[in-house]
Image 1 (cartoon, rainbow, N blue to C red):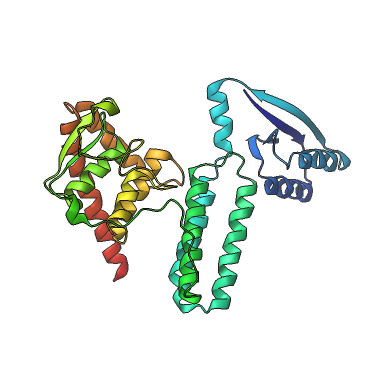
Image 2 (image 1 turned 135 degrees about the vertical axis):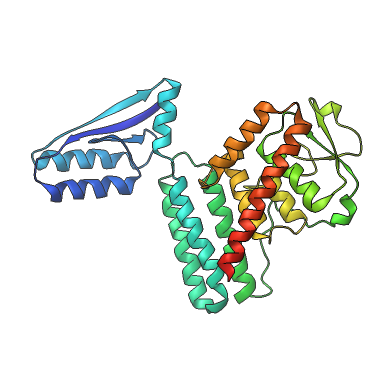
Length: 319
């Protein structure tokens, strides 16, 4: 059961000025539009009083307005209403701005860089205020801004200490060759991507063991993507991205682009254009494969193609 406050309105015909003023005021609160003239906010949102203010403004102009409490109980309806508050695309735009700022840091002086970072920090704060159900997308944007802040400090304030919090430690790939790797059976996107990454870039002679219960894990095997594994999720990064960072592969833009799609399919967050196609293909592979070995083998071919396409795309953009 999820509680909301709602505003129902019917504005005077022809009063476009009032319509625009009311809409701008409501939009700034982060309310969702359930249907034309029906606006909702979570009952716990601090912006709820704005609904009563909008009601008074509409009534004063001769329109109809009424505020009410709304309780949503059916799971499908709850999911629909919560989806109306999804800020994933807005966070995606912000992350794009942060990425552009990173590219511009070297040509900006300290003063301009500090101003830019502060502006982005305020933008994240403003968005977080209306993100009532903070999601993976918020964590990604927060992590991206933190990286930007660290790079700005390193570039313009050398010697300043950096914040260390849940980050992957750089490892020597040579020590991870010719090993046995293990993870949960019934492989899906993050684990499939890790299997491909390990075999393609880390341990070409890797052997894999899929387990049902953690107690079945083989001794001395390198675990990934489960609680207590050597490699698993860290902060906003999924296991595939942690492996990229751990083995110094995160500078490969094609691998990183693939990571965006893997993260979105695994934990959600900022939508990725290619993620839907990747998911469809992987589901098709799983439906026809005879076990995890075959799934991993066929999925590896798909990841090869995605990686090649991303590499070609970034190479063309660099020319």
